[in-house]
Image (cartoon, rainbow, N blue to C red):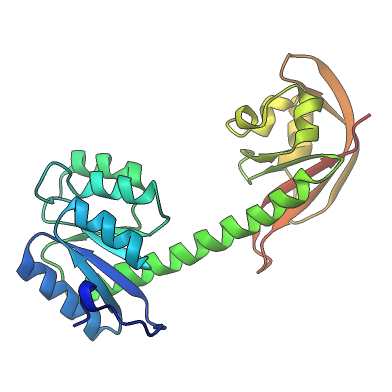
Length: 253
């Protein structure tokens, strides 16, 4: 079994997993199951300090984290500290189906839960699901970053929003046109920038994969002042042509 102290320098194509579990027997059991499934256990940890140190050094593809770690920081505290520094998918391991505990764990946005005792099928399913969603999340983030780079360099008003109307990106030209700071705009719905229900229909209804041109849409800026603009709405797609939302573009007067 590959240990933290003698980590191989040879690159591996296997998914690499860090196991954080203070029950040594349980930790060994999990590591054996993972290796039998074809994953690589790059290390283990029994407390928060070890988990932080080894996640930074080893950069695993995923962490299996026992919620009930002994010590001042439990698994949820440890997960919070890790994700503040690195974007690593985390699966929680627990023997307690405690609703309050799960509610607290939600803030760390875990990729899954394993309830002790579990079998190989449970473990395989949660791992495969977590790796799939992690890859999807990374793909979407990269696509949005590419779009962000483009719209921030534009001389036009550019606003991206998801299919529910929540604003994703708001460029500097939009900030000036709407008298609204980007960080505040991202917390709003696109509907809060529109004057009438008819304007909302233009931006939110219809085929989200269609290109929509409209000569006049009535907006309201951050100070409550109404103004009109011609717009073009195009679908916001990632590199695999999957729909992420919509891009509104308008040439400021």
